[in-house]
Length: 332
Length: 201
Image (cartoon, rainbow over all chains, first blue to last red):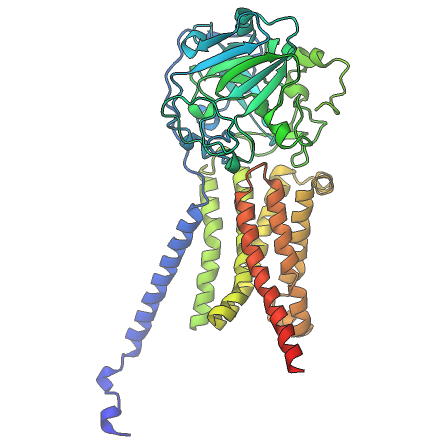
């Protein structure tokens, strides 16, 4: 071999250096890829829970009515696990998406079959005596919470507008201020944003719900304006929402802008979207299963194993009378 | 350690990263208000992701000529099975309290559970026959035939994911499109092969 082509002894990396360099590269690869995988995985993670900063509501009377011995869930849990599809279909993503939602000015129009139809400013509504109601809250998805609401029976509003004799049902409508390809929008308060199109939510907007008039007049059915003595966080349906504790959570419509008394049963969003899965009544009923979720048990947020679901969510003594003679397996 | 061995080790460690972070977050209560639901959803998505990665190997070899990737396919497949098992065990313990009759009832009543169960059951023979010894015993051709079960498995997996959604189908649709492309690639490849054979004879 020609001398000039031969690699000089001094040019050969000695074995130790070679091994060290290789180990160094390998350690780098291991660290680098692990961190990259970790960061990639983190994209799947829910955002960390947000602290809740809303004002105190003054003069809330503690109500003995329907209070519970169950331990209420923490405000952090209640305000970071929400179904509010106008903002996001991710329960942990709603709090962040609803952050800039403006709830002032806000009006609630009460109309239809009433003697004195009226558009209430939210300030007028907040003048109604507010009381605390600690209720179980059962979602159709099989989880539940215990929530100390602040609010008042819907009946108080009806006492002001005076329903007519032919009013049989109550229709509720949620504020909607997103881009709506179906064109069924309502006026938006200034600066309201963060809402998505119904195309992404997969259900038509604006969200609508309904009750029979006698259900709405039941003393347990309330309009809520707060939680834990504080003003409702946006993600929980600020500034005013319905709470019907013996029905699945989706009946408790959020951010109400319109209440209409009707003689005909009004359409409701989820039964429009999937009539075989969700009925008009949607009373909590462990004997009527949903195609995706067993309704016999539920996971209380904060607990790992499941507990039995109670008929009417445990409010049977108070509300069973409303459904006398009805086949609740058929009229679910 | 040879480079192949080291790269396999790299893949092994990286495959454990999600489980490590999940467990870490779980231990420190960082999985949100409903940790069981989050754990279930994440392990399900990981199962589907590893199935997709496994199916990605063949097209990468054929399109990009990265033949060496075949060495990592077994581990990807086994990770899919592993996360599928973690998914099933989590569901059985926390959702069903290990009540076999309740699980059977769920399979019977809820199509999405049935789809998931079938998919995971079909993965068992693939995991069992993943060793070199088993490949030899079965013979390459038969082994390959058996392992084409991954096609129905991944389809069942995506259907399972689709059926659990209430109304927002974004993620199942993304997975569905990816699987459609991956299986479509194989379909066209076969069509071409069949065409070539005909033109030769």
